[in-house]
Every structure is written in structure tokens, then in C-alpha cells.
Image (cartoon, rainbow over the protein chains, first blue to last red):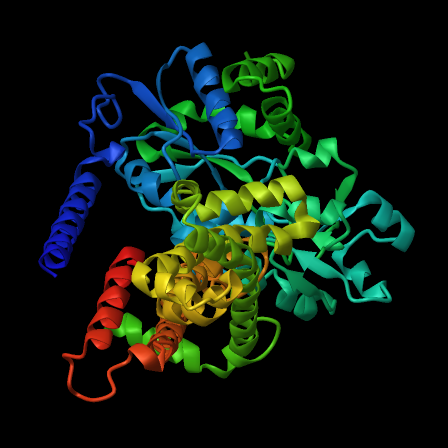
Length: 306
Length: 247
């Protein structure tokens, strides 16, 4: 009994210690807390800090911006892989990071939960309004990284499918696969019913959405437009003529004080970056295992922007 | 406090009680995966545990194997198995994961139950001419029962808590509101899901606690408040000692 009591006490002490250590860890391990040394808002240095998400495709775009700026004679500091939107947006807003490749729709969703715009132009216009004064959106690109209703090419041919509305022609109710949250999004099954009058089942295929589509477990899959699978697999995204799905084009977000100065370097990149470019660069990264630097340099050269 | 009332409101919303992800459906899926996994694990672990307990051989191996199995992270194992077996076999991948999770507790419950029995009781049984099978069914099984139920209890609790990750690979269950709610930043929904899992675990634990008490054979239960009778002391002490082993 005494040993039992002792071991229980030891356990309690251990738990308390572990909790203290864990909490202490939370306090000091935030990488964004480290003293800032770059140029940022300091206009004397003229260093432009380019950031990127912890997402390989986003890093490639950031690398393109950084190399183009360097080629144009700017001093550039790279702050890549700084996590997800919640983590980096405060530093972008405060000017610690001056240039960040973003996605119009997803950023608008983050800044304004009640936003209703879905078409590329509307989303861009709404985004410009929603951005804080310290930030400016440069020209957006045709390339996007947004949800799609995607089917296999064979399924599309067999059933004569071109747009989401055509899904209503099917004899059996198709099942839509995607991330769990898609079920609740405005462009999920309920949206398809409201906007295209298409009845869809739902399956939360999450990480295995592409595999589930190829295995025939679902007939329609939500695959992001920049996914390498659009080049490596026989799949095709259905057209969305009524703009049900939130557009999310690649857009450079810049600190207001330097936006005009770098626009002449960055806007031509947005103009040249097509949807297929982004997919093929993602293929180079995931299939060929090329580095972001090499992919970016090659693309700039091919487009005559170096 | 506000988040709690929001979570309760989410639970009571009629929208959660119908459709593909209705709460009763999710509860059913959760219980189904729990039951299948624990049954399969029992079919493997109990005979093995009894054999070890009865013969006294292979204990070190059992301890090593179950210790190692406890250290396997279920989430990583589940994702790995889904990748290895393919998306059409996700239910199988999930059951394997949960079975591996349940085996250590069940195995420990089975063999410590036998080990905790006073050796003199077994020797006496053998001395009066019982066969090994009779010793197993008439002496070891009943006397080891409370600890075995204890093992089942902890296995069930772990599996109920862990089946939550099944929603991550499209198997539904009470993890669904949690897995869906996080990317939507709907924390009332996330908390509601967590509450449901916790309540289910507590209910099952209470049920098993009652069962565990009922599993103490009448022969070693105290017939009256008089606790000095030697058989009572022995039975209780061994049960208690073994209980601390499983815990």
C-alpha cells in the first residue's frame, strides 16, 4: 500500500513536471519570436524579405519572386517554410516579411469569413478591400491552386461530361470524395445541388482522394488545380461555368511601401505564370525531386524573365 | 464556459441527428469498430495469455512483445497500413491498428490473472486429482477472472479513445465531428465530438467496473462483514496485488 501511494505521488510529480516542461517549451520555441535582423520596414537597407508557406508549390513561386528580384538588383532575404497562414500572416501584416505568394480565395476566406465572391475577378476585388492598409495585392496570375470537381478521363468520355452540371445526366448518384470539411463548404454537395441541381453522395477520402478516384471508390474528387496528378494521371477537372467553387489564384501580397517599386518585376511573372506552368513545376518537384531554386531558375529562363 | 454551451447546442441541433453523419450512425460505427477490434484481439491474446499463465513459460517474451506493442503510435501505424494495403482496405487497416493496441492489455490481464493465484491452490487442485484441463477451467479461469475483466476494461478504454482517428481515413465514428471541425475552425463541433468520446468511454468503464466486481468468484468473496476469514483475505489480496500489476 505504501509503495502504491509512493508511486502514485511519483506519478503526479512526473505529470506535473512534464506539463511544466511542455508549457515552457511552448513559450520559448516559437521560431517567429527570434529577434528580427532583416531589413523589412527599414527603408535604408532596402532588403526585401520574401516568405513562403510550408508547402513545396508555394516555395517554388516564392523562389521565382526572389530570383527575379535579385536579377533586377534588389537585395533579397528568403524566409521560406514559415508554416501556415495563422503563423505567418501577422509578420506579413507588420512588414517583417515584404512579399509573399498567396492564393486569392483562401486568403480572402481567412481575412473575411463572410465573403461571398467566387469568380476570380470578384475574389480579387474583394481581397483588395479586405487587406489591411499595410498590404497590397499585386496582379493575380491565371495559375490557381483551388478545389475542383475532377473525374477520370475515361469516366468523362463514357458519360459525356464537361461541366459540373453534366453530372446530373448520370443514371446513378455519383459520390464526391474530398477532405472532411468539403462536406460543409458552400461548394460541397449542398452547393452542387443548389447551383447545378446535381445530387451527390459524399465520402471523406481526405489524403487518399486521388487514389480513391483512380480505384473507382468515388466518381468525382476534389483535387487541387495545381496537383501534379493533372499531368501524371488521366484525370480531368469539370468546368464550373457558374463559379460555384471559390477561385484561388496565385497572387503576390506585398508591403504597401515597396509594392509599387517591385511591381514592374513581379507583375510580369504573374502574367506569365499559367495554370499548366504551376502543375508542371509541381511535377518537377514531386516526381523529379528537383530543388525549388533549379525549378524557378529554369522557369524564369524559359519565359525570358531572367 | 461559453464554448461548452455552444458544444451542447451543437449536439442538440436536429441537423446533427440526420443524414449521412447523424450522431447515432457515428456512435454505431464507433461501437462496431471497437467491438470487432477487441473481439479479434481477445481471440489472439487470451489463449496466449492463459497458456503463459498456466505453464509459466514465455512470460518474458509476452512482456517484451506487449511492451513493444504499447509503444507503437496508432496514428502512424494506421496511415502506414492504409498506404500499404490501399484505399479499398481501410477498414482492415483500422482493425489491425486497433487490435494491436488492444492486445497488450488483454494479454497482461490473462496471464497476470493466472499468475496471481496462490500456487498452493493450484497444487491442492492437482493433489486432489484434477486434470490440467480441470485446473484450467475450474480453478484458474474463475480465480483469474477479475484481473482478466480488468484487462478487457483497459483495452476497451484505449480502443474507444483511439477509434477516433478512424475518421481520418474515412471510417466515420465519433472522431468525425473533430476531424471535420478543425479545418473549419468550428470549435463547438470539435468539443462536442470530444465530449461524446469521453462520455462513451466513461459509460463503458463504469459498466466494466461493475462487471469486474461481479467477476470475483463467490468462493473468495466475503460472505459477511467479517473480514478476518483467511480465504477472503487471500482472495482479495491476490486480486489487489494483481490489479496493481495491470494498472
